[in-house]
Image 1 (cartoon, rainbow, N blue to C red):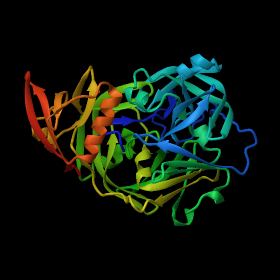
Image 2: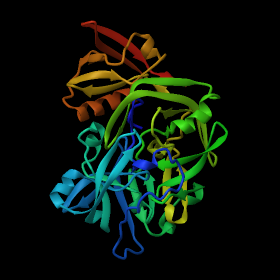
Image 3: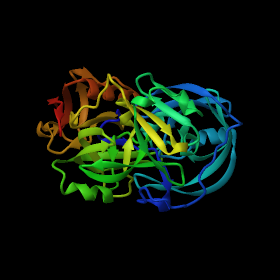
Image 4: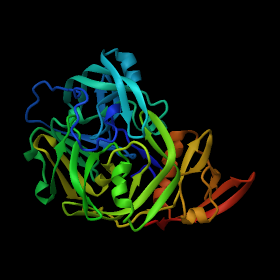
Length: 401
């Protein structure tokens, strides 16, 4: 996924009074809009990057920016773009987020937003400020391409080629005969929901490419499964980040088997925390399946990526590394993990990794370094500062479930 286990970046936001509504259709305000100037019979391939979110280029106000593709969120632009372009402000209203934070937010009407030749006019968007969201600052400087735009056409996300294909004619998409078709239900804001089995029981999930975890649950939904789950874990000092900022909290985890029309994931972690939330299937699924969105016909397709079948279980080092206050620190330690048993503590300052001094100079640089180490290595030697003295701790990657 790549945003490590301790940090769940969930960009999708929703009206504050909708907290905990799950898949219900509750009309809270008019959904955002975007129109196209008679685009017909088109086919565009848009390159994307995946540093934990699907990032594509889009032009707005005469400049090109990085935008996140977010099926579970609303279209958004940064306040820096708004200050530059001075788009018409339609209204201001409270907007909540999955981590429970709520802020009053302007809705503006942008003249146009273009992606690879596909131009949307009169695009309504929330303005966002990433000043308290360091991971979002690393990933995108434009905002989010949200459900109001995505629902109009067919979008295929192909991680194996790092391309997003957009078309108005699904017959132009190849390979769907080898894919699993899933029926979806769009709520009033174009956000897609479907039924999926969790440990043998059906549950509504939103497909949310703005969520960096494979599986995330509202605590009320999680309560249906935790008693019978065969394994549990806790992430100490875990974090949930949206554009509103971060919440640091203990994040709970339970083991689950997932089945989506025969697509199966075994012994996978489902994350939840006490507080607001939604029940989500997140973007990591694109590493194993080419995902095609055809929301105008209420359907999605999942085509296996042959060279990247899903692995069973949940393998991790049991902690995260994060650059904060000018230092590398241990965060998101999994209680009872091998890392915790070595004496590693959440909040420990890391002086060196594999006997190499820390050389990254800012949050984004250090985030990229830590992601690479935690994903590729099997053993890490951390030199941490405990009781004022350096201490070497060897940590091995393990199967938590």
